[in-house]
Image (cartoon, rainbow, N blue to C red; front, side, top):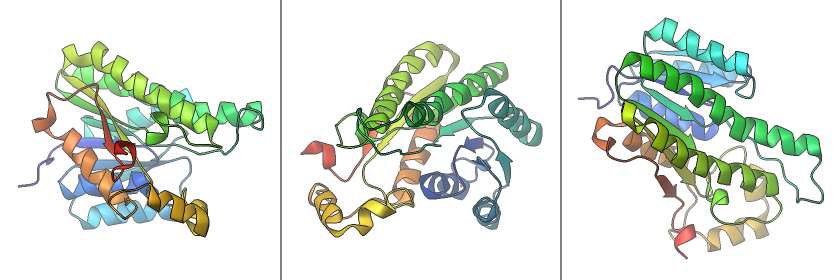
Length: 252
């Protein structure tokens, strides 16, 4: 039996990369999935098609998670289609390189708008919907090990992900009484389009591998498996937790 049969999820930024890996993992367990991206394109359509090929239902909803009206429409459209919302995965994120002295104010603000404000806005309207349903819900935030250990040259990204880990703990306390759990996943180095330029550079790739004890980089499927675990009814006693999925990086 599929463990998430009858459940409905929204996965932001799920037209590719980690988000798509999470969407596929949820779909394999029978969950209906709302695929999201900031614009509709081939990647989005392919993600929906792949989910449907697994026997789960899916739609795509275009939304910029940093815009409140877009987020309101994302939740509204999802509930109109599926009648409920059980799982929100706040995955949408961007990475802008730069140190404190080299980043522009515009780059800093955009990083915070997507990576942090997007989590706030999506959680706000998803939690309201979950409370109205009077049934348990799951919020899963995709943070990063860059939010708990430092990485040179990506100050805004580290700051935004560190804030997500703290927002996760705070929200877990506020909404536990409604049966809503709020947890985060902290990925290590995952092979995606976002990390391609780093991994294509041989010295950087070697350095990253040297710091990953299991001897391989992670995949979107690794993060998808972690998200499924946190989405299950069986994980209902876990909340306010940051689940590190990094191949041992932070254990060194």
